[in-house]
Amino acid sequence: MNAPNFNFRGFRMSTKNMAVEILFENSDYLIVNKPYDMYINSDDENEKNTVAYQIARCDSHLSTSSQPLHFVQRLDYATSGVLCMAKSRPAAASAGKAFEKRLTRKYYLAIVRGHVGFELADVDYGVGADPETLHSNHKMLARTSSSQTIQVRSAQTRMLLLETGWYQRSPVSVLLLKPITGLSLGSLKKLGRRHQLRVHCNAIGHTILGDYTYSDRSDCSPHRMFLHASRLVLPVDKEVIDVQTKTPYFSDEGFLQHWKSDRVAYPYKTKGDFNDVCDVIDKSYVLGVNYKMYNCTN
Image 1 (cartoon, rainbow, N blue to C red):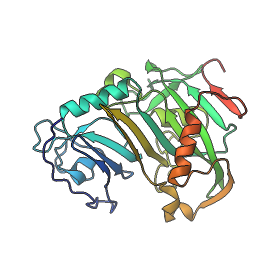
Image 2 (cartoon, rainbow, N blue to C red):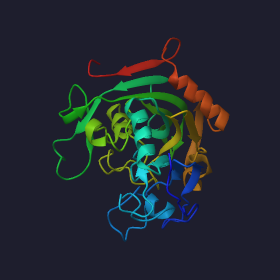
Image 3 (tube, rainbow, N blue to C red):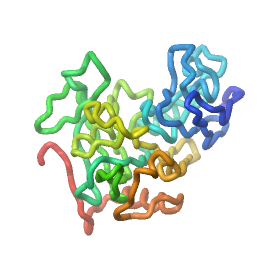
Image 4 (cartoon, rainbow, N blue to C red):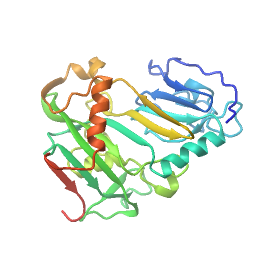
């Protein structure tokens, strides 16, 4: 695939003084470490707090741009971590097929409220629109036995407990999350699983730390929402792109001053250890672990 010649801004500082770090680049793809509280793009040409503006141009998500970027996945404004962009339409189509066929593997690091009662869990709740907030915000809802949702799409998430601890003297758990149903930007309207990880954590009673929306606007003391896209494995053509970031929370003084560890279930803070826990969550068997299944039958 022949890609246009880009003049990326690399580590230009954002309006929040956070660098958009380039993690990987070849002739077809650009993968960055998106800061939290940053949009991926915007139709407002004056909006500078976007990945598109920081890396290339403010209009790089538009086909008319002189430096077009094709976002093949989406991260919420409050979510940080690995974000993949294609430099050409053929490259975007190749990546989009991998997402749609569920050949990609995505791993997220989350800190949730409360000490979870499992080591490994599967959450099988469809995700749809909340009819009470359909026209007022973008909040989604899990289809449980007691909820009323519309425009529901199937969604599965696997969760692995890594560590328990305390944040501001309240119990929290560090989880590895793996969405089984993937999202690509091109299939977003078709598959419709917006906020899947945030919705599933909330549905099992363990809202993500700092998630203002799904805590009913009550969890506003943390300085960020603690959801980070840590690793992306993307098979495209004859290459498998495997990109991973450092664990962000434990170099964040704003977090560390309120954090106290309780019990480590799996080491995960080095690259090798993180790859090992990814291997654990990838395994299909559940024998010998404290396993929990969440679905509409229980």
